[in-house]
Length: 469
Image (tube, rainbow, N blue to C red):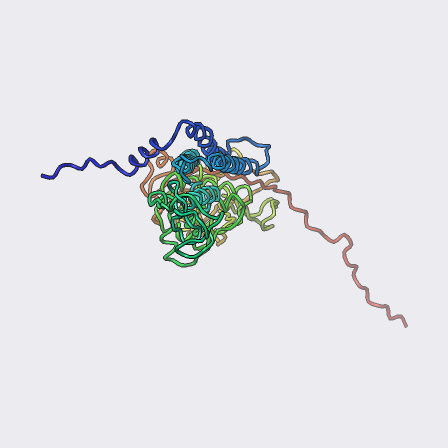
C-alpha cells in the first residue's frame, strides 16, 4: 500500500514560509497595523447595528474607517521606503501578504459576526465596499509581487546582470538606466484566489438592487433578501414592486422573518404611514391563511371592520324616533377596507335595550360575512338569522341605549364554525386560527308626537239674498 502523504496543506505551508521570512521588527509593524484593520470591521459593524448611540454625525463611522485604512496604507508605504535599499530584504516580503490577508479577512469576519443576517444581504453597501477594497488590494499585491534581489528591465522583465555601458536591455533594447526594478515577478495563486473571492462578493452584491421583472431572476433570489428588501422599503415609507410581493406570497417563510414583516406592516398601517397597498394585501393573505398571532388578528380587524347596531324608524338613520312608531334594531358589520368575506364568520350573541336581560336580537348560528351583506333588506318573519332585526313599538318618550356583543372568527376553509363562541375559546377548531369578542353601542332618543292641528275659525254659512219688492 502506498504510504500516506505527509505533505502539509496550503495554509500550513504559507504560515511556515511567513514564520521563516518574518523578522522581529516585522512583528512590531504587524502588531500595530493588523488590529487597526480589524477595528475597521468593528467600527462599521457597530454602526450598522446602531450600537454607537445617537447624536453623532451619521458619516462619522465611515470617515473614521477610511482614516484607519489610509493610515495603515501610509504606514506600510513608509515601512517599504525604510527597507527599500536594504540588501537582505526582497522587493515583496511576507509581511505584506500577512497584513493584507489577516487584516482584510479579520475585519470582514468581525463585521459579519456583529451584523445580523438580514442586514448582511444586499444591498449592503458597507460589506460591498469593504470586500471590494480588500480584494483589489490583495489582487494587486498577489499579481505584481516581486521576490529576491535581482534587477530586471521594467519593459520586458529581463534580468540584468551586466551593468556596463551601453545601458540598454539586451532583450528589448530598452534603456534601463535608473529604471530597473528589483525582484522577479512571482505571482501567488492562493492569494489571487482569495482576492477573487472578495471581488466576487463585490461584483454580485449589487445585482439584486436591479429591479428585474424576470421570473427566473426572482426565483433565484433568496427569500431572506426579499424580506430584507421589504423591511427596508417599509421603514423608508416607500413601495416595493408588486412582483416581489407576489414572489413572497408563493414562498414558505420562516416564522421569525414572517412575524417581523407582518408586525412592521401592521404598525405602519395603524400609524397611517403605509403607502404600499401590495404590502397590505400580503399581510391580509397571511392572516386569512391562518398565519399570525392573536394580537395581530385583533389589531388588523379592529382597523378594518367595526360591528355596529343600526336602529331604523320613521326618521331613517337619525338617532331620533317618534313614540308609537315601529323601531327596527339590526346588527351590522361596517368595513373600512375590502376583506375576503368568505374568511370571516360573525356570531351575534345578543343586542340588549337599556338594562333588560332579555336580548332583542340573538343569533343561533355563525354566518360568513359574505352572507351578511343583506343587512339592509327587510327582515323575514320567523327567521333567527343575524340578518334580521327585531321590530318593536315604543309608547312613551324615553332615551334608549342599545348594547350588542359580537363574535368574529377567521376561518381558513370558507365554512362556518359549528361550535358556540364560548366553547371555541377553550377548544378551537382546526379551521379557525382566531376568534375574538367585540362590543357595539347605540343610543336612540324617542320623542313625543306633535298634536294634530285643527281649524279654529270654521267657515260661516252663506245666507240667501233678500228679494223685497
